[in-house]
Length: 309
Image (cartoon, rainbow, N blue to C red; front, side):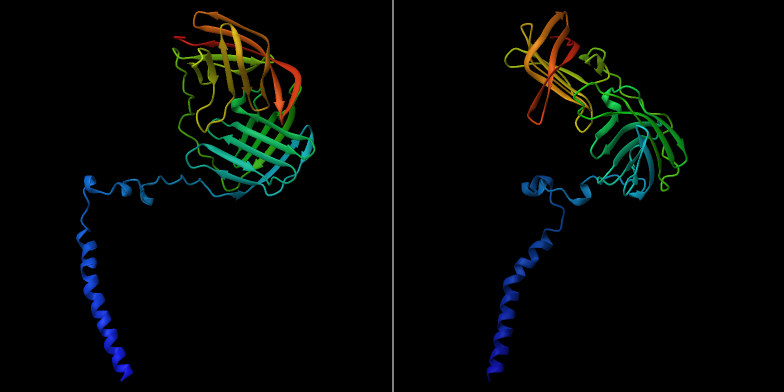
């Protein structure tokens, strides 16, 4: 009798649930038609479907084994785990090694057979580099032989507190997975700066730091001072410069590049000369690294053209 009563109760419960759920099941069916945009819930409008998100561009080939031989200042370097990688939307190829021990990062532009950047790390000695955007002298040379790239030139020690010294290097890198580098029909042409826009030319310790090819900006600050800036586009590498002047005085100065960062503690040997839209600024900046200040001054000279200011 207990079993029969239980069976009857279960059937009654199931019948009751079907009656309760029937109108709810019908609701989604009625909502299958496309909802007009005006009637769509606001919370849903902020949700992007996976298909609407831009997919990352696949590389030309996956991370693949490479062979790399290199010398620095005439001494051979050995590396661990050398690899290469190509990029689907860029005419570049990259080489890298394990960070333990000697290390190398190399990025080449296959369209122009030139070095975008190279960085060599040697334990106990430091990091040596050259970057195309840094205005460092003596660009490396690249010879391409199929999947092999012979690179030679000079690199400079990062954060060298003294005069940067060129250190010769050679790299022979082979990427079997990329025997024919992708190249455009014509080499890319860098965008021309606006001839009527701001322009900054500057030297640090007598060496070119920025020129008319670097993006410059001028702005009037709330305190009435004029700010002159050079900064790369978002996500792009480049040298940085910021000077703020008012009433013929330098209020602030900063330069940051591939090898160094200098700023003002107390502006010294500073001068500002205004000639129409042009400003000629001179100031000594100092290196401050890991909360340590260095006493050696670094002379910065710049000419900024700020139309309308």
